[in-house]
Image (cartoon, rainbow, N blue to C red; front, side, top):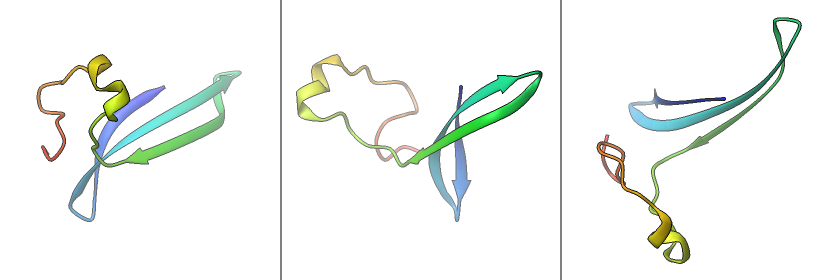
Length: 58
């Protein structure tokens, strides 16, 4: 599993990849992409702000 911030058309986007390995090779990969978003109100009390990772921060 990996998480990184990529820039696509000048806009930072979070990318998460989940990879399955077998025999030293990637045999399956799923990728997820999202822009920053605030935690929903129902989960806001469980969320922890990370420096440099806030909504609207690049």
